[in-house]
Image (cartoon, rainbow over all chains, first blue to last red):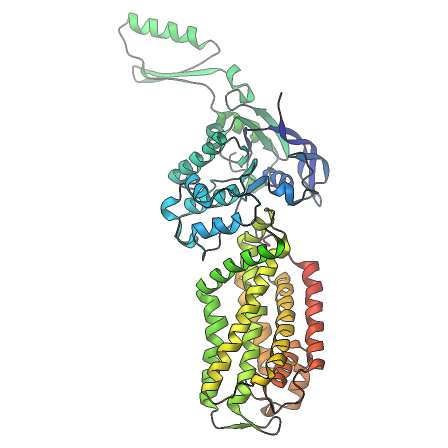
Length: 293
Length: 255
């Protein structure tokens, strides 16, 4: 029996004439890492800010941990953690002080040392946050959201602007949250991030949901054609097939018979990125949102 | 934690951040001291034709104290709140169970403590230059300081509503306050200012606060607590409070 932590029905949000969110439904179950994937300007941040109680919706129903975020109070805030899309820390406080400051806001905070270890900043605990790298600051950001030991954690584009190693470190931290049994609502515009971290992915484009599923079966990736690629006598050969086992068998049998090597043999299914690009390509996005098209 | 304990908690960290920030230490603590030393040296031995004639040092002690109190409250709050808002720190804090007023109370507490500290520091330095500390007037000085500090805190919080970015903060705050210090007789003794200037400055709270503080601090003055001036300062403060309640923003204006 699924236990929805977040439930959204027919959510709408308009800014003047513009409709940023145009009627979305979704549910997030307890203990899952849920990725909300979409290009910039698709309505991700608007949606997550409505769930966090920062914005009022124009229409629809929203329940987060059993309450309407617009009316939820202090008790509700004890149970959630928020990592905003952008945000700087107080540069004059140390890592430990920043965590201790936030620990004071909660009734039953997790011990600061534990939080610092959880986000891998033990060696920087007494460093001022102004001297941390971007990736370390972001991990501290996550740590400050974990101080209250929340049931539900919102992460809004946690790795945007990171170099690859900082992303890996942030991913390890997020993957660790699942092991703690937290429910994580993650927004991102990186396909690989959703693929790597999420149990379920929902793709939003131009304020509407265009696909939902696990990273594996999203957009019926399984049913798509498989691509086989190799070189034969210097020529590149590309085959599309719905029956890859049979085609491969025939190819390799023929090659073996001729004692030939299939150079650079590659068998690929459409990647999540291919599916994502296809799904978000025809949505009418403002120009700055067309990052992936 | 209870509300009050939470304010104490917030205040401790605001104090740490304040003293580690070179800009706040320089502009709020060092600048008034340097200014006083310069004025005390340049005008030493001269008399100011106020209240039947007092020496310049005695004049500048309450003058620079007024400036320091306004700087610790209005200026510090306007600047640090805008920076925290644009950094997204106010928004992040609102996502926690901490009641929003606690955050403001911590900052106001920080400002008032710094203002009290500046009072002590400038009184001590003034005494070195021969300006006696009026111990018997301490109650009047504290009443004046607290009413003024509270009012200028409200004005500082209200001012954040018209400051669009971190870069604009210092410019806007100084563009408002520096001319008022000049016109109110804080930098140039009021006996050297044309009559019209003081009359104009009387439209604003800086002049009234300076006047009240002068009355409290300089024994040659009239009654110790200048209630009429303080009433005008308090009215400004209440106006600031109402504007702050209506227009204060927790989320960044840019981005």
